[in-house]
Each structure stands twice: as structure tokens, then as C-alpha cells.
Amino acid sequence: MLITNGCYSFKGISIPPEVNTFYVRNFETLATNAPPTLGLDFGERLKDKVRSETRLKLLTDNADVEFTGKITDFRVVPVAPKPGEQVSLNRLEIKMRIGFINNNDEKKGWSAEKDFSHFAEFSNSTDLLAVQDQLVRQIGDQLLEDIFNAAFNDW
Image (cartoon, rainbow, N blue to C red; front, side, top):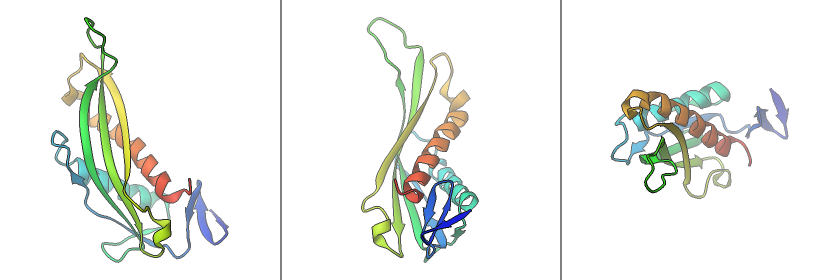
């Protein structure tokens, strides 16, 4: 752990010393075909990531920083279909809209919610339900990393 310019810094993370607590509101699932627990599961995973990779403590209200979010899209699309050819790969895409509020300094939060998306491909001969949990986990890992970096790294 390094202390530089009054900010907590570890693995590229930059958290001002006055930020000590965080809160993750329940994520809404607006995508009609998404698993019903996807928003709740993702919110819990975000809490775990922030707890394990920062010094911040989880609160249920009056936190220094807050995350809000919604699952806006969950879809399977064919990859590069060509006329007359059978598609060999499908792509599961998940899109989210995330808010990050810094209650101590609104300039350090996001002025508007940000969109994040990621995907994973799977064979068209595989039933989505057979691989859905694994793909959602894989996509979720990347989304968590992107959201975490956007919130705690001054990129």
C-alpha cells in the first residue's frame, strides 16, 4: 500500500482519504429476458469486489460513495451471419447503466450514469441454459473490473 498526495493508492486505485465508506443500491433488472436475480447477484459481487480490493467499509446509508445500477440489456445475437450459411457462434451480451455518486465531493463522482457492456461467445450447438451461468460469471467479471476502474482509477 502506498500513500501519495493524500490519496489511498493500491493497484492503481486512487481514493481520497476522506472517503471511507461505500454503498451499493439494489440493481434493477430492466432487460425482460435476463435471469431475475441478475441485478441482485451483480450488486452483491460489486460489494465483494470493493470490500476486498479497497479499504472502504460497506454502509447501508449515508455512505461517502454510492453505486446505482440497472441491467438494461441481456441478449443472444448470432456472430457474423452470412446469407445461406449457418452461424457457428452466438454471443451473449449484457449491458448496464451505472451511477457513481461521491457524497463528499460531487466533482469526483460521475455527472451522469455510464453505460458498460461486455459479451461472451458460445457455440450455436450449445443450449444457452447449459452455459448461461458460466457466461454470466465471465461477463460479470469484466463488467466489474470496468466499473471498478472507472470509479476508483482517475482514467
